[in-house]
Length: 178
Image 1 (cartoon, rainbow, N blue to C red):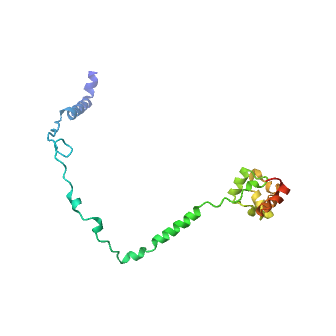
Image 2: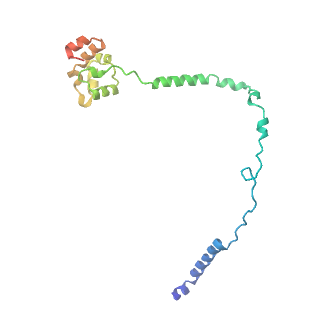
Image 3: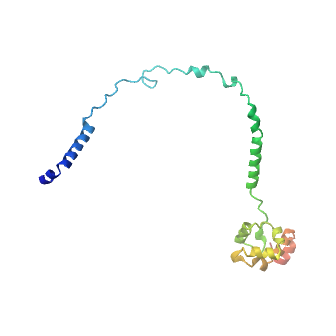
């Protein structure tokens, strides 16, 4: 081990110097003197009552401040509030849900899943189904997936014509009880 230290005496000296420097930084430096002066503030025991801010108490009330007179550029912004209110009103009307429409599940062959699918496709009333042409029926039928063929097989157009016209007795005579 002595031979190793003799061969690397520069590295050993550098490590020793580093250790001494760290030791001096940690323990050897003089600590700053503690402040022994006590502060006497409002929260300290024995302090007198706090002084009130008389500047705020003696200030003029806000009502006494004269109103700000608008400059000549105030006309540039006139009507902006009305425009914003009108645009917001249009947006609220557009976001309002559309009326629910007719209960399409009253048509024989339309269950809850098919009713939901028809609403996704925008079909919400008996009058819409009653007005379907053969091309319209084929277009809708192509989008019904596993329910394809139901509109024609279950005579949806005829059922919808009777329901849209309010002919409940005619509907029940041909298609059964509602």
